Structures are given as structure tokens and as C-alpha cells.
Length: 216
Ligand code: SAH
Image (cartoon, rainbow, N blue to C red; front, side):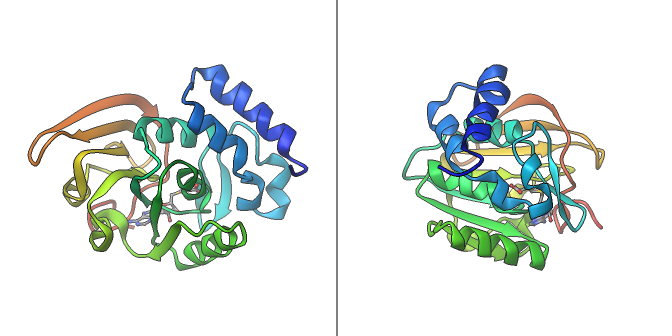
């Protein structure tokens, strides 16, 4: 229990269940992770509102519904190893760590990676490793992954990310040809060369910047 427990429960019932999310493991994770600790003290009172919030460096922590939706689409099991591209505040990584066995999360902005490491360390999230690298090429050192979440908008699906999925693995990624809006795609790898793509509708993420993403 903390001073925001009630707001967190309300966030889950109104914003998530109210919009049709039903995965009980995801809902429980969203009820557990203290989102207010992943934003500045000034914004803590807004942490459970139905919106993204700034985390500095022109980046944002995603809207709670978007985090929960992406986690539901990843279809995670307790033993899965997951790669997240775009650590940002570390919040989505903390939610993922409630749902799987190990999380590798990568962030390109050193200060954000450092802050996320501190918060996740304070919360005792020891199944999460944070690396400061360009995640558009994935993180081959820990691959293959059961699931990959990209928390920033890509111009196209980076081939390297598809290749770092296990057979049966899922990649959830916002893709769009403008830096402002994307479609949320779920790509499932059925076998070495067989991938299936589903479109889960329009979203708006900050751009994925890097070798296989947008240039600055
Ligand atoms: N999941 C985050 C929100 C991420 S916002 C959270 O829960 O707070 C998207 C993040 O992706 C930003 O922090 C941005 O710096 C990062 N990003 C953008 N391009 C990247 C890249 N190529 N590799 C790693 N991180 C990247």
C-alpha cells in the first residue's frame, strides 16, 4: 500500500478494464507498479491520469492504457525473456518484469538510462538489465527473445528485431511514415522465415531514433 494505491486501482478499473482490457496478469501488474515513482516529484499527482507525461529530454512515459495494451499483445509467460527498446522512465520495463522472467531494456539517452537504473534498483527489480545503446539493431547479446516491445515509433520494422525473435516470438512495435503517428503492429514469428503481422490501430509515440530508425 502507498498513498496512490486507490488512484492506481481506479486507473485500472476506469482506463484499462473500462476500455476492454481483460488479461488478469496485466491488470494485476498495472495495479502493482508504482507509476508515480517513474515521473518527477512535480508530476507525481498526475501519474495515474489517462495521458502520457513528460520525463525530460523531449521524451515521455506512455499513457497507462498504451502500456497495458502493448503488454497484453505481447502475450507473456512467466519464464519469457523480453527485450524492450526505449526504456524512458523504466515504467514499462517494471510492468514487463511482473509478467515475465527477464527483461533487457535499452535506451539511447544516457541520463534516462541512468535514472531508470536508479528507480528500478530502488524498487528491487533485479530481473531487469538496462543498457544505453541504439536499440534499432536490437540487443543481439541476449537474443533470441520470446517477445520484443518497441516503445517508440519506427519508420519501418527493423529487420534485426525480427531476426532476434524465437520461433513463436512476438514483436509489438508502432510503425508509421510520419514522425508523429503510427500503427501499432504485432508481428508473430511462426518459423525461421514465416512472420504474420496484425494491425492494432493508430497510436502516437515519440520517434525511434537510430541506425534502423529515424535520423535525428
Ligand atoms: N517505455 C518508456 C517510454 C518510452 S518513450 C516508459 O515506460 O517510460 C521512448 C523512449 O525511446 C525514449 O526514452 C527515447 O529516448 C527512446 N529511444 C528512441 N530511439 C531509441 C533507440 N534507437 N534505442 C533506444 N532507445 C530509443
